[in-house]
Amino acid sequence: MQRLTLPPRPNWEARLQEVGFTWYAPTPEHPVPYWGEDACYALSAAQAAQLQRDAQTLTHMVLDATGHAIERGRLAELGIPAFLHAAVRDSWDRDDPSVYMRLDLAYDGVNPPKLLEVNAQTPTSLIEAAVSQWQWLEDRLAAGQLPAGTTQWNTIHEGLLEQWQHLTGARGVGQLHFSAGRNDEDIATVTYLRELAQQAGGSTDFVIADQIGTSEQETHLLDHWTLPIRHLMWLWPFEFAWESRDAAYLARTHTRFIEPLWKAATGSKGLLALLHELHPGHDLLLPATLTPGALGADVVRKPLYSREGQNVTLPGQPSTPGDYADLGVVEQAYTPLPEYPAGDGPRYPVLGVWVAGDEVCGLGIREGRGRVTDNRATFVPHVITADPG
Image 1 (cartoon, rainbow, N blue to C red):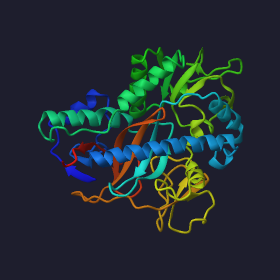
Image 2: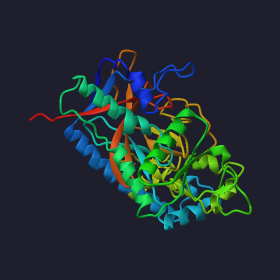
Image 3: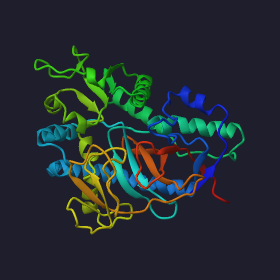
Image 4: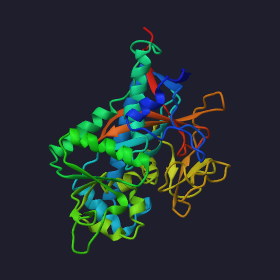
């Protein structure tokens, strides 16, 4: 895998804004640009095909481990509070449908990829991966800046649309509410997913997360405190919801969530330990444990639920800052991310493989300036080049 550089497109900022991507620029709080306009990672067709096969294997393993955790009564080990266990089991037993998931991998283009963690519920970097990097590729090809035949592993948009078609068709999902917090990135991401659902024939509405209401007299969550919500695509982490004032409603509401409640098990980093337990020595997994010290000192310590690299401890280093220091942890064997030189210091990419339903469908890459991928790690497009001969 190579890291290539290209001159910026003349109108690149306007092109990003055209698809609703507005959080690309540096800010005083985050001086590193979030969108990597002038670089890309290049994989060969053979590398991309093997990565796809490996990621599909991991997808099946992750979903099987989720079922194991739920069916064997191991949700407490994953950090899920006891009052939610029955609701998570019911969601799994109903086969509540999933639209997306992302597997984060360490990959150098030579050795098999290693699963770092699973993003199961909140689709960070979705617009960047599904839309903006494809737009970037088309613009580069049209300008003659990439060889003819250069492509991407990117059917994310098509895969998500197919999932919504399945939900609104075969699964009979009717009225859909979409919800996010009050920030541009979350609202844009939910808007994109809502547009896909509308293309698939769904009837949709939008409500800000803090305007979702509850009532002792109602069996569903409420839209603006009055109308029942039957299905809720909710860009709000379950671990936030179960610590909120209305947490009890999460366990007993008849509202069906997208992503479903059973994804609380998939999204726990404790699942990494169960995966290792179920598949010891597997080429695509790193040893992981819920027993501190069982793997020795050369481990990464991660809270069972955390986001954007918060409260992660690498061997011999202090923990990164964050809001999850009071949670239980999983320890995972340390593997170094590949390092690529750049003009202002090394880059450390993490590959995010997107899954629609249970089928892998595309790749997005974020590169950090350090070995922990945080909330301002730069999203960098990728290309697939033709193999020689």
